[in-house]
Image (cartoon, rainbow, N blue to C red; front, side, top):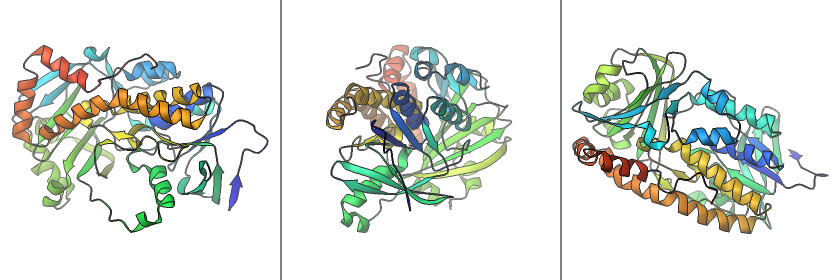
Length: 399
């Protein structure tokens, strides 16, 4: 096993696991501030990723701050003016993107993540792709190094600060917890409560400039145009409902998704393009934002917000900025950064996560979803209030 160190470099090394929007954006911000950063990414880029591929209007400001807004907006994605929610009966109500500050953007994760990673490289970030983190080593001050594997074999990446941006997997947090607590190896794995699906299609009959959300028995999903004339169909269902359909994706479409009249009308004649993806989702809501004293989590690794809010990308980008600010202001002093990040994260995100938790109760039951849609959104004032509550605490101010 080889050991990669920063000997001769007096700067503290920051190691980020995961090159999604959370990982790349925090790496960019820290590198632009003069810090030494390494990104470790398991996959080869560009790559297909299960995601709704909806970039809410507030994200554009973050893109502008890290110098990628022009590249994102010129990548051929769809400008989204409205999100329209459809009950199973076909009745609908729309929310205009402008209440969040402008148009949203729908762009494939393959393209968006590639733009961010290239920007990280240009900022001086060392990027290691096709490299899997398989273990951690602990020292007196927390994590001392990561054990990684790639085509060159096994090696160790040393650092002073580690950031878990591995999404719902929470790889660094799980590995470090297992290392610190040997008994955790024998604990029963929690059965996932949900399954997410994604398929790019050609020929979907949706209105350009609109993101359509469909509620159906046991789940909900959405369709929006992305680049190259394709649309992204992404949906989530309870694991129980998936099992009842034999996990057969054709049955899932015809016997569940197409129970929504609008979904059947827009998707029944669409042709699949590329791989169909499926992934287990164990839970929603907050996870640990900090683990060992030098381990921080961002994006979905810190909290997974419900897809119907359309704010997953925003949470990734915003949590990355909050963390980078805390690290920069503390001059990478971990105890100070941990305290600041814990407080600021709770202030910005806990309210919107609670709101999403309440709305989630209705999302998976068509009758309740239909009633909720037309009760809550009958009034424009009520609609705006609930929509903004999924961004409660959002601000472009730093603290």
